[in-house]
Image (cartoon, rainbow, N blue to C red; front, side, top):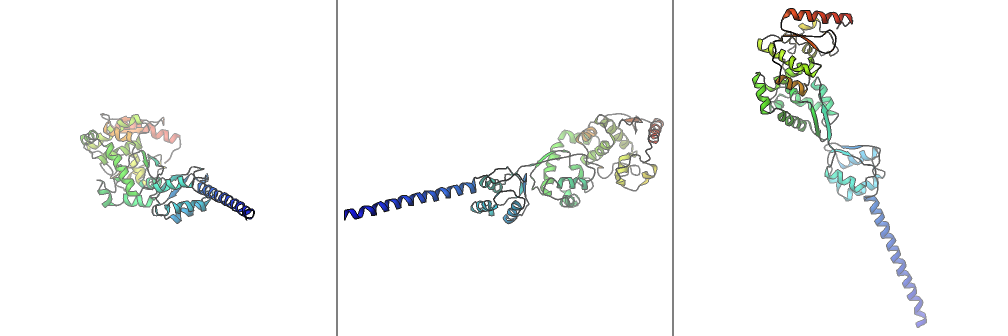
Amino acid sequence: MTEQKAPSKGILKKFIIALVLVIIVLLGFTAANYYFKYFGPNVTDKQEYLYIHTGATYDEVLKTIQQQEMVKDTASFNWAAVNMNYVKRVKPGRYRLHPGMGNRKFINMLASGTQEPVQLEFHGLRQKEQFAGFVSKKIEADSVSIIRLLDSASYVTQYGFTTDNVYTMFMPNSYQLYWNTSADKFFKRIYANYEKFWTPERKQQAAAINLTLPQVSILASIVDAEALHDEEMPIVAGLYLNRLKKGIKLDADPTVIFALNDFTIKRVLNRYLSYNSPYNTYLHTGLPPGPIMMPSVNAVKAVLNYQKNDYLYMCAKADFSGYHAFATNVADHLVNAHKFQQALNDRNIKR
């Protein structure tokens, strides 16, 4: 009997060892599979950013990732996303993709909304339509939604503006925003910067020259359009303030160009001066209802810190240096104007 049982025990022992080995292999395979699905490099270098629009579903996100080949293995990403419950935690935003990133790290970034901010800088944009188009390329809000708020009297009134002068709120600066910023949130961010700029001291300076804050920026837009060199801005600002105080029309060529909406004009002809527009300062006394361009911060500061002078007239210098010849009387101004007109003729500049 003893001799017959020995082989059975040996077989059982071998079976157990084999079973243990199989289990170890299966566990190893499971662990490796788990590791590669969660931690293995999966994000490609095909795209720099993943954009997730507000209201997007998980299926839409997955479709974008698949179509733009953002990961090597879409199935493993989907498996990890489902197991990490990302399906119910989709957040809009612009997410930077790091090549070689694993699914777990990638999904954690998306689920937590850890996106990279957008750097937005703007200056010198003439029209709000141009501005809206520029901004819409940087954030999720489209140009239509931005224009809609700019043109909404009920909306801009809450910020103290009219639809004519609301553009003065957008002061050139460098802004950090998240890509999924709505038009309303964008306005709030810009207004915060506007309030920060208008310190009590600057408000007092504006009051001292009898201008509202929007009027300061409207005048600054004309100064900015006239003065190619920043050092001339306070002189030009002083001249226009002199004309405003005396009730003399500003006669600013850039306002006529803006009214005509033709920025190719290099020579403002007499026939342009009668163009009927509230922005034509050859026809209307005082400031136009809104800015003719987005004024620079330097132009706004130049108006607040204007040079006290007696100038009432100016004309571009005939050397085309971008500087101006200033005058206190019509006779001197006509001499300067004749020199410039002759220079235009010599260069065959007709309009």
